[in-house]
Image (tube, rainbow, N blue to C red; front, side, top):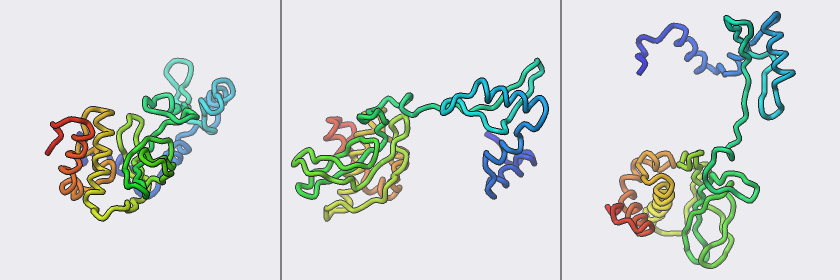
Length: 218
């Protein structure tokens, strides 16, 4: 672990500049090649090696000349999320990174489903088209990151049960993905410590029934 008391003056200045709005783009412009050989290397790389949408080279670009004849030219390589996503995809091949939470207005059925966006879904009980009342964003490993929709109250009079049911849905999803769901996973999905403490035992009980795993019972 780096000791902040031993931090170099240059690093301290950089962190202060970042806090005041310095961007990576500003740094790249500052270190970009000027005239002469560095510019020639960059121009050659851009003309011969760059591929639109796959390998992008800035103009001007950052160039690092080596001890041997030649130079490294900074390039940006595109990596499509679909290439490293192991979870479900939609009909267009887009990763389903939205874990949507639904509750039917007609029959009170609750469920979750993964989609590539916060879209409507059909109730598994009565077939009604229902909007999600909440969405949990998943990272490329299928783990929850944060809620990207404002929470809206589901049609139930018991707020604690509502939170516990939504938490249980997440616990079931995460355990099926990675075998364990920790409090950190719940916090990453925007549940507060107070909600975890008050609703967590009930949620894990719901999840135990869904998964048929008595070890989850509080």
